[in-house]
Length: 151
Length: 104
Image (cartoon, rainbow over all chains, first blue to last red):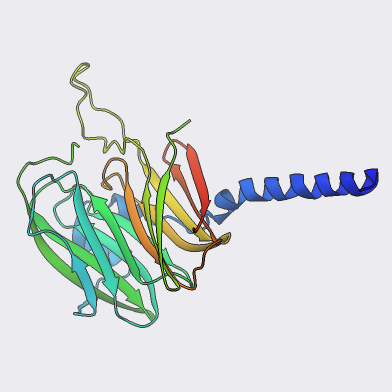
């Protein structure tokens, strides 16, 4: 390798490393729906995400425990069987701020997520799905035995 | 420096199940410090991005009500050994962390 070639290789390598370091930050694109996340009641949060008229559907499969022994660690899984699923939201009706998560799904990933959430009280957990521009949801009544969003 | 992100990937056919653990306190802002008797301020991961060979496949916004040391599972399509899978997060203090590995 000539000196010039080596220099250009190093420059490219440095460039690649810089690009790699920047990828995650640049990928942070989606605008946060701050108002929806800060909303203190579930109806308002649903309205702010555009899901006020969401229809309950068996094609949204929400797995959550009947009884959560630890309210700070409630494992849930959401799967959408609706074609064109773009976004999945998770809410817990009685949390001080019910909207917990929004997952934007891009091509190359299944319409599925699993995550663990904190619940302030026994409540309905809701999974809302946007598919082909329409909103659908599933809900599950989950009881918690030890209180505390404190965890 | 936040503690390293951990990732476990299971490849089955062309489907990769990715399980991620992100060490983070995820303070809700409602917890009282037992020593100072004061509320511990909110400190939580509010943005997570997952990539497959550098391309974003999942872009998540979170609240303080995701559990401490968040767990996340997602499933990649058209995956094969040697593919790169990455996860990056940013919290409400502007701290970030990222991790990338290859599917084995």
